[in-house]
Image (cartoon, rainbow, N blue to C red; front, side, top):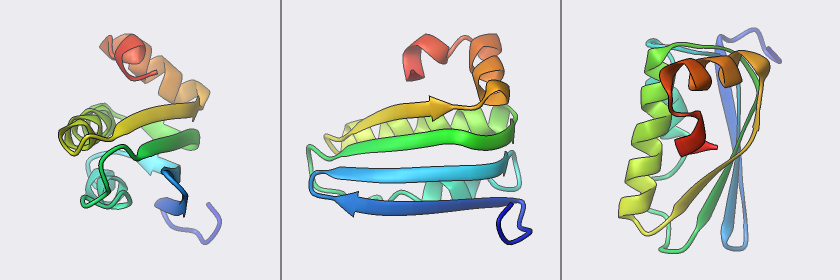
Length: 103
């Protein structure tokens, strides 16, 4: 981690695209923080590009956070695109059966 925290996120809007990067551990204690890193008032048609390449651990709470984020964005007329995943994230998404749905 950059500053010693368990989880961190950064976000940057560029035109009609919202770039988000998560890093660290994504689990029950950090999932709400992860979800809160994406505003819930985006304009319709915004594409949220989520980079998970620096997530070192993810449990079922992290999977749920991704599914809720995707659902909430779709309800706003926005789209979630997962651009990169780390090996641990890829394994969890495969094991839970949501890899094809989210990536």
